[in-house]
Amino acid sequence: EVQLLESGGGLVQPGGSLRLSCAASGFSFGTYALSWVRQAPGKGLEWVSGITASGGTTYYADSVKGRFTISRDDSKNTLFLQMSSLRGGDSAVYYCAKAKGGNVFLAADNWGLGTLVTVSS
Amino acid sequence: DIQMTQSPSSLSAFVGDRVTITCRTSESIRDYLNWYQQKPGKAPRLLIYGASSLQRGVPSRFSGSGSGTDFTLTISTLQPEDFATYYCQQSYRTPLTFGPGTKVDVK
Image (cartoon, rainbow over all chains, first blue to last red; front, side, top):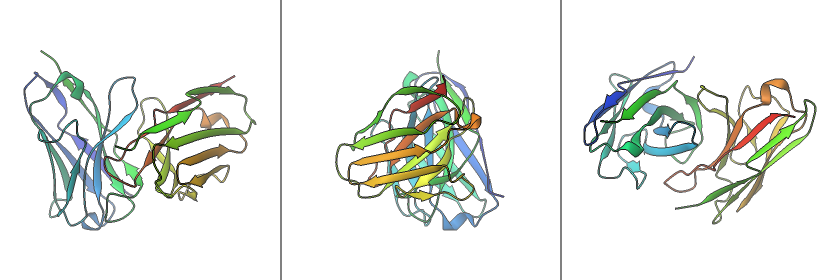
């Protein structure tokens, strides 16, 4: 059974940094692309960032480009999102999502439960 | 960025009704269109990928159609567990944008 478990969320001040992790199990981690998708309270879904199976190519939404960095450690079956220069608009539940194949241009067929990030002073 | 619109933004329906949700994109995305269901406090669930392929484990009352810029999600016979919010998403080009969602509730 595929499982994705996010961690690392919490309360952070504007301008601060946070590192999210997503521990994966139940599938061949290195074979699949992964993404981060967020959802602000009461709002819709926003794709944030994606990384190919090889880790060689990363993609970002304009709203986070230059502030967030996605990475993966295939030896630990873990996806990361390093977030810096955080703003109030970054407050959301952050979901880790697995693509149906090795590139990000595929549907996300498995999702984690999410981790809440709150940016506030 | 590819812009996504969904209609209606919300609808009320009875159990047993046929429900149709439309998604429109600002440019052609061929068939790179996915549909997700989300219930309150839960993660999204993939229903349809590639515009018309049913994800494994999803009931056959869900179907998708369309290509280019116009897409449809149909629930043939609405069940109590189908009351939720539905999102379309294009995976043709990054950023992988989502539609604003359609909330389906009980009439």
